[in-house]
Amino acid sequence: MRTCKMALSSAIIGSLCLGYTSAFAPYTRLSTSSGSSVIQNESSLVMKDYPKPNIEDTDNYRFAESMSSSFSTSLRVKDESQSKKVAIIGGGLSGLACAKYLSDAGHQPTVYEARDVLGGKVSAWQDEDGDWIETGLHIFFGAYPNMMNLFSELDIHDRLQWKIHQMIFAMQELPGEFTTFDFIPGIPAPFNFGLAILMNQKMLTLQEKIQTAPPLIPMLIEGQPFIDAQDELSVTQFMRKYGMPERINTEVFIAMAKALDFIDPDKLSMTVVLTAMNRFLNESNGLQMAFLDGNQPDRLCQPMKEHIESRGGQVITNSPIQSIVLNPDNDQIDHLLLRSGDKIVADEYISAMPVDIVKRMIPKKWANMPYFRQFDELEGIPVINLHMWFDRKLKAVDHLCFSRSPLLSVYADMSVTCKEYYDTEKSMLELVFAPCSPLAGGNTNWISKSDEEIIDATMGELARLFPTEIANDDAWPATKDQGPSGQAKLVKYAVVKVPRSVYAAIPGRNKYRPSQTTPIPHFTMAGDWTSQKFLGSMEGAVLGGKLAAEVVANRALGNAEKPIKEIQSHIIEAAATHVAKEPIGVKGTGAIAFGAGATLRKKDEELLKESDPAQFAAPVAV
Image (cartoon, rainbow, N blue to C red):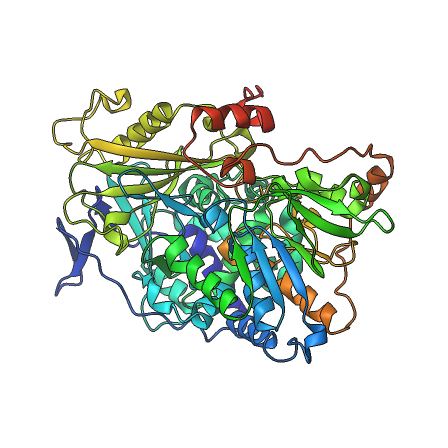
C-alpha cells in the first residue's frame, strides 16, 4: 500500500490531464469501437447536480463527528451552576460555530457581530439591483469533515450542490482549452489516482513524473511530522531542494498555491500543499466539490443562528466592540465596552476576530506577554473577488475552474453552478483575483488600484484564456486584440476587495499560530488562524471555533485546562523588552474596518490608506 501511495502522490502533482475542452464549453471524449476517441463539442449546458458522495467513511469525519457529539454528552453541563454566560466577539463562521457548540453543551453564548450581516469572510449582501455580492468564491470539499458534520447537524445537506468528481484546469499554452482530472466512480483512494496516472499522456513526461515522486516518499513514511517540518520552505524551495522539474511549478503548483491561499508558489509554505495532498490521498471523495445553492447569509449562517437561539443563545448584529476593559486588580477581563456605551459582562470571553483586528484590540497590560506578541508574525493576505455579468450566455462548465493565469486563481459561472443565481440567458462569472500584492508574490498592490483597472486587467486575461467568447470592447482596452468571433460583452461588475483575508501562509508561520487556550483566565481564542490542522479555510474556521468551545466547556466542568501551545524562544525574549502601548482599536465602520471585504467607496479607501498603508505602498524592487 505504501508503494502504491508513493506512486499515486505524483499523480496529484503530475497527472492532471485526461482530455481537452474548448473555450468555456467542455468537450466530451467518446470511446469508439477501435478504442480511439473523438471529440464532441457541447454548445449548451444545463445545471446538473450529483448525489452527495460518501464523505462519512473516513477517520477525519468520524473524529469530527465524535467531537461534535461530545458537546451533547461528556462536555455538557451536569447542572445549571456549570452553565456559563459566554460573550463571543465576531459573527463569522468561527464565532457562529463556537456559539453553536457551546449552546449544545448547555451554555449561554451571545455573539456580538460588528456589521449588519453575519459570515465575516463568507458574508454576502445585495446590491441596488437585488443581485447578491459575495465576499469570496466559496467551495465545499468532501475533505471538510467538520463542515460536513455541521451541515448534517443542522440538517441542511440538501443545500449543497455536488458536482461531478473532476478538476478542470485552463491550458496556458493552448488558449481556450482545458484539461481535466477525472475521478472514476467506485474506485477508492488512493487507487482513483492510479487510474489517472495510467491514462495520463498529456502534460508531463514519464521522466518528469519519476522526478516528482521521490520528494513525496518522506510524507508517506513520516506523516505529519515531515509535513509540519516543511513549513520553513516555500513550494518553490521544496521543489528545488528535491530536484523536482521546474515544469511542475508552471503546470500545477501555481494553480494549487493560488487556490489554497491566494499566493504564488515562491511565497507559499510547502506545508500547506502537503497537508492538502495528504488529505486528498487518503479520502476517496475528498476532492469532490460542492457549491452552496444560494447566498451564504441565508443558506448557511441563518441556520446556525437559529440553532443557537433555539438553545437559549443570542446572535446580535450591529454591535461593534470599542475595547476590552480589564479589572485593575488582576488584569483579567472586567467587561467588553461596545461603541454604543453598553458594557458586556460574562463568565467567559472568546475572540473570534481576524488576527489583524485582534492585534488592534490587545490591552496594554497584555502586550508584553509572549502569547500575544507572536501575533505580530501573522497577517492576513489581500485578495479580490470579482463578479462579472455578461450580455449573453457563455459556454460554461458546471464546475469550478482553475484558471492558471498570472492574475486569476479560480472562477465559476454562477449562473450555471448555483440554483439561486441560475440564468439561462446570461452568464455571471465569479472570479478570484490573485495574487494581488507583493506579500503574495505579485508585482502590484492591486488593492490600491481602481475597479476599472482591475476589471480591464481581468478582461484581458479572459480574452486570452477564452478567445472565441470575449468581444473586442472599446470600454476595455485589454480586449483590443480580440477577433470577430468573440461576442460577449460585460454589462455589469462588482469588485470586492478584502485587504486582509485568511492569514498569509508564507514559510515559517505555522509555529506562531496560537492555541485556543490563552494565558488570560476565562479568555479564549477562536478563528481559522489559530492552531488547527485545516489551515486558513472555512473548514479551519469551523474547527477553530469548535476547539475554542471545547476549551470553555472543558473548563466549565472543572477539568484541567487545555495546554497553551509552545511559544518560540525568540518571541519570549523580544516580549520582555517590547514597549507596550495603548491599543489603537478599530477605526471606522463597515466590512473593511472589521477585517472582511467590500466594494470600496471613497471614504472606505481613505480609511484603508490610514489604517493599512501597506496596501498602497509601491512594490520594493528586487
